[in-house]
Image (tube, rainbow, N blue to C red; front, side, top):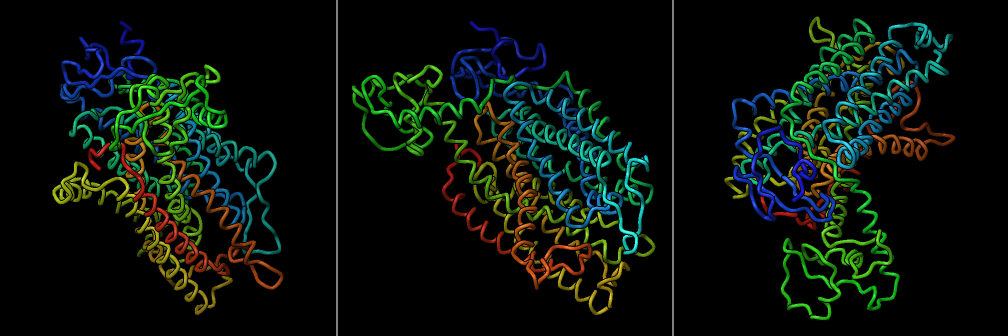
Length: 614
């Protein structure tokens, strides 16, 4: 019998799981579900512990302790990142003297890279390291990047000379050379660290729950809701206190606070090391995916002979079909496996043959079915990119719009980058209401475990993003009308209109983010094969990254199409009052509506792996 230490999918706290029953389809005495792994994405031929025993979490107040740890870590981590990301466009334009459009593109590229690198963090967590180790490595990298940015912000010699943008006789010098290299080195070290954290931390938290029981699955769903809640808590501190510090005390203080926050998050995370349950890496899931695709392609092109016969496979128990028994002749050609194949993407079934052309291309039915799962979730991932493209506007043009407006609330001056305060607070209020009132009510109405399915949550978010872009267009029309009527189109003086008008688009997009992000994280974690859950949850952040990059692409395309010898591009120049931003927002509204129709098609087509909760 293999030792549990060598082959268990999870590292558990010591001395808490004695006398484990390692027989296939059995359970441990304390309720832990067990199964013998096959050769799929989730394990080697080994005994796998798929969930922690409920008795472990009931001991003392460990559950409360772990919850507090996770909340504090996520709050500090997101504070460190969002404190700079939300105001970065102002730092690049005012201190590094980049134009508004270049500043916006640099911010979207930075944020897009950070979230895209979550795929790397998720992949490394599944394949070679644990989510625990990836978090620590990534947090250390982010800490180093923030130190570099703090040093640059502190030293005038490392920044371009100060200037007055309103004085055309003395043009501002853009950051270049070694100063630009230092700036972007610091930024992209932060991006690398953020990516690793986003790719490991959600999966690390979700791994702690017992998904073999309804209670455990409900707790996991609550975890994802409160994960977004903690993101908002960190964001609230970032866009209020830290942004105010940056605008009034200096950016070296803002970067310094972020540096301290990420350092503290490392210490807090380490405090729970003895209690974490860590999934043991099982090798690269991408290797299996490519192996199945290549084997299917090769076997399709090779003429079927007795030596390379493609297995004739029945439907999976997940999607049963009516039919007779397969013939004895076909059974002889069947490759050994633990389950039968579904009819969807039947071309991939050709990866399973009796005698593969090479031993490296030998595939099992389980591997084929798991690759099909990955393919099926990709259209849902693609449908959320447009929403995140809309979210990118909150960090770019919306901040620049607010910078031209009246920022006073009585005697208090509100920094434009603090506008995310509104959606953040709204999410903090809505998340508990959603979890404790809306979901229980939905469970009673729908008679399902989860109340509202993952795809329904995502769909609600997409609808809210359409409304948000329409509201943004109307607000911009009003803002420009005020600028024209006041004769302030070319002035740097604040317009006689409060920046709180911008809050409306923030509220709708913030609500969209709550529904979509929590729904996506749980959808990918639940539907993905066990051995690639970290990578799958990283798709949520990759969607955000792709949205930011797509935003830059759309801006460039719009400018290329609208600009010619007689017309000025919609989104170019140093004065946002001369932009046709309202047209751009209407375009985003239309594209979002088309994207929602696209989502409805795929959501209706998608079949959940399990009907539990969905």
